[in-house]
Length: 295
Image 1 (tube, helix red, strand yellow):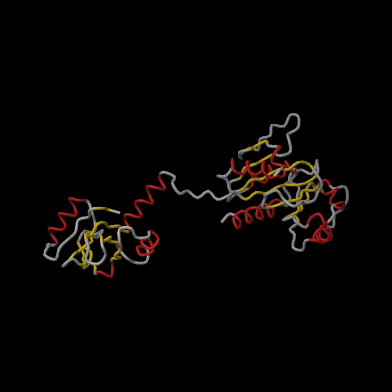
Image 2: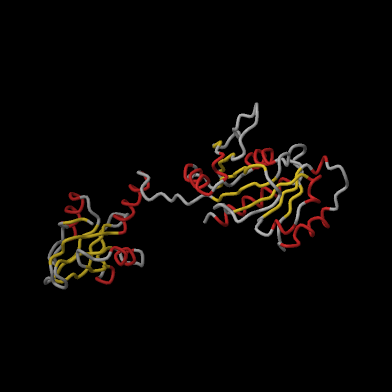
């Protein structure tokens, strides 16, 4: 709020007010008549002064609640004028919509008030050899609308660098537990999606450790051994290596079986290590989940 504001009286000529406003570099002057706020002089973008009626001004006290002030400004009032002592008191401050916009621009430039929503966390669960790492790498490479980071809770083996090209990566075995995962997510909080490759284990979900999405990853040759009861808490199932399956898969029938305890469960049939078969609907599903949950 501009304190000790200039004010205009009923006998001030518009040309004198123009010179005064140009000298003081202000665009608004409250008009006070007989101790009463009677209107507001405003210099328009085109140049001429216009006199607005008192209905264009919200009168408040100097200690007014800021929420009420902002609501008045963005509900059509041109300015808020603070008056000491109530009706008929001295004008002690002026706040305009232009002032608020300047404050917002300055804050944005300094990074103040930046929204840092928690990223969506997707945990990949499944046995060794299921292709979780390959799936993670291909998923990150194909994402179009979200920024992703990676956590590898499954320690890299000999000769593996533990880095996913194009995405910040944390090698963090402790992410297998709730606190460790929370610490990793906090460290990667500027990203929209954090993909966690969990430790090798059964193709089933558990009670969760703070993630948003549990995705079971299983190779095509092992999909028949997956118990649908273990998928009750899953948000999706990804069947990989469909290009090297040792038998013909009836994907429709097998998908229905996997959804036996979790109706509506998405099941994706992919070959990410060979010809990217099925990756497009998977990518679209992942991005959709992030955009919906990350609002």
